[in-house]
Every structure is written in C-alpha cells, then in structure tokens.
Length: 244
Image 1 (cartoon, helix red, strand yellow):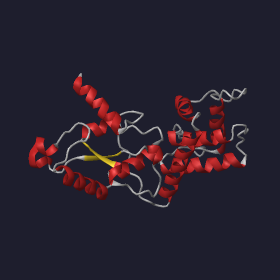
Image 2: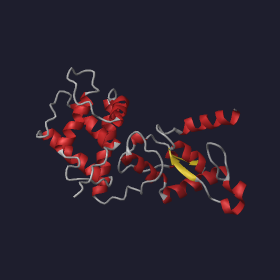
Image 3: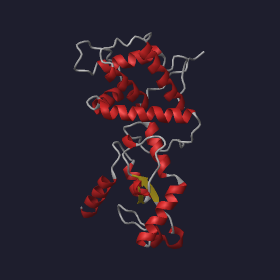
Image 4: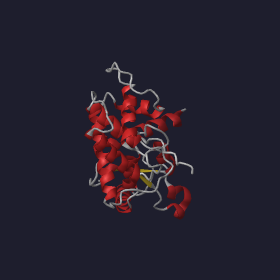
C-alpha cells in the first residue's frame, strides 16, 4: 500500500506558525506541550479549509513542532541552530514578517477568523483562480477576490461611476469597452478592491470607495505576481510604459 504524501505547507499555515513562534521565542516547542497542540488544531483546520489532504500525519503535532524549530534556524537571536531542513517559503515568510510582528498578528487574526467563518458555512470562498496569492496567503486572497466579485456592490459601483462620468472606463488606462466594441461592450468592466489585503476582516462591509473600475488587462497585472500592485502603483507602471 502506497502512503499518500503530505502536501507542502501553505503560506497561510506558515504565517500562523510564525506568529506563534514570535510570541513564544524561548519555547522548546514540544509536540506534547499545550501551546503546540493548540496551534496544531488551528493549522489542521486551515489545511482542511484549503482542501489539503494527505496521510494520517498531515499537520500533526510532531510536524508542527518541527516547523517551529525550522524557524529557529533563521532566528539571529538564538544560539541554538534549530532544524535547518526547511523549505524556501519558510525563509521568505521569515524575511517578510519576522521584524513586523504587529502586522503578522493582524493578518493571522484575520486568517483564523476566515477559517472559522468557512467552517460555519459562511460563503466566503471562490474556487481557486489563477492569480498569484497575496503575501498574506490564500485565505485573505480569496476574501479579497470574493469582495471585488460581489455582484450587488459591483453593480452599485458601476452605476455610481456612470452617473458621475457618463461612461464606464478603466481608471488606470482609460480603456472604454463600449467605445471600442460598441453595444457588445456596454457595461463591461471589472472592479478591484483597493483596500490592502492585510487590513481586511470578516464581517466588514465593502464601500463604493473601496472599489475602482479596471479593464481585464490592468486587473490581471495587479494580481500577476507578489507583491500585488496597489492601484497607485498600477497607474504609475502604466504611465511609464505609455511614455517609453
């Protein structure tokens, strides 16, 4: 019988583990300790919510303990070496957040809120699309995408913009679908949620001012790679490209 291999740790799981590590830097991270076992339960729920599957050892306390010790190998404040057989993503997450524990704590709090909401059958998630996830992980990336695709608020945003400007166009490059494609392009435009992913939280209402209109190309460029472009960065990139 072939044993199913466990999938690599996701960014979401690593962020939650790193947050625990930074809060408990002098812990021995014993797999039998109450803190590690509590963390294991949280990470296991995240894995389940993300649809991960593997063997019976998937995200067990031993694995979580080892992952915490992997972080210790990156910690300059520790003389002990920790475990050095970690993967590249652990190092990346450490570099991004080890010196900013307050931001990490906020992100992790939202990840756990989203996980709980998903467990309670709250419809927060879309099927995985082909955009690069934000550095805050899949959970917050999906919540971001859910909000900018919400049909009700998108319809209101389009109506508000049309009332003010008399047409719909990309707010980054100016592309107007109706002007280019005639009636076939009437009303055709996408919305992008401009609020930083790290500042999203469960239960928050999306305001019209949180959305901007973007053509499909510009919207794709925002999410094409990590870190995602802000709306201001997108306009700057477009303007530089248009001049050159």
